[in-house]
Amino acid sequence: MKQVQQTFTGDIIWEPLYQIETPVVPFEIELFQSATLRRLKHLHHFGAGALISPITHSRFEHTVGVWSLTKFFFPEWRELHAAAILHDIGHLPFSHSVEKSLGKNHHLLTEANISSFPVRNILEKHSLNPSQIIDLLNQNTPLSSKSDGISIDHFDSFMRDTYGAGEYIIHPAILIKKINFYNNVIDTDENTAIHILDAVIKDNRIFLNPHFLAMDELLSRAIILFSEENPEIYKTIDQMTDYQLLSMLEGSVSGIVKELINVLVNEPHRVTICKNSDQGEFKAEVRKVYNKQPFVNGIPIDKVLPEVRQKILELDALCQTYRFDIKN
Image (cartoon, rainbow, N blue to C red; front, side, top):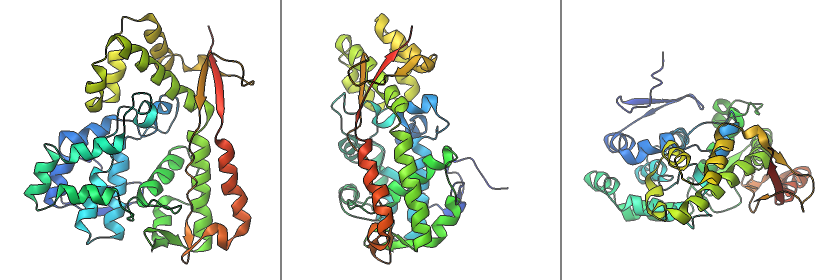
């Protein structure tokens, strides 16, 4: 039987989504066992939408997946292994849900954490340069390519989300055996590329569903209202977990904040999406889609198979504004 606990106390880590065994070395063990990484276990990758969704994996599971894939495809690139472990440590509670409303940037917070105790000390202890790891996170690499292709980070998100939703045709463990990398992005055969693109499209449609967006907006609204009376939250939220944030908001003296959190946690069925854009007390807006695509023999799939181009373009139509109300 595989060792499914991810406490990093052994020499091999089992990654269940991709069904691969990944050897772990001392600096990786120390990073994964640090409080900085363990906090990710208590942050929903899917944001506040996880409160109404079967997609409930944490940033920690995502990070283990990204790290395992990085070592699977690039076993000798030690610095990239460290970058994979650390790439998400700056996320706030519920991931992207409240970042914009608080004027935060998880990339900058990640860099600050890498430059600070305990991460910096662990890296330097094992002859790894924190500045070099930060540079890798800002460059085009297989971990986080800036192009229209798919990097390891985004690939894991697409696979993990759609798997959690039961929206997959070919299991991710099979797909990874059919891909490689071209100029830092995923490259494969036509058939596999079609299945990967299908996951990209499905995932966008899932996380940009108006009900999930409404959950993020309600949480964001609650935090903004709470911060008006408690400005110290801007400093303390960076190291909070999802549970700690919800507990703090539930203890607010504001009746409005308490009601918003009650809807989020206990009565999300009261959220109603309005049919008309000029109705509804609340507004949720889509500003960005992840219209990434796999490559086939070094060429984007929409250039190889023009018939899929329309599917990619249709993702842009998801950028719209929704109005919603809370029923009494």
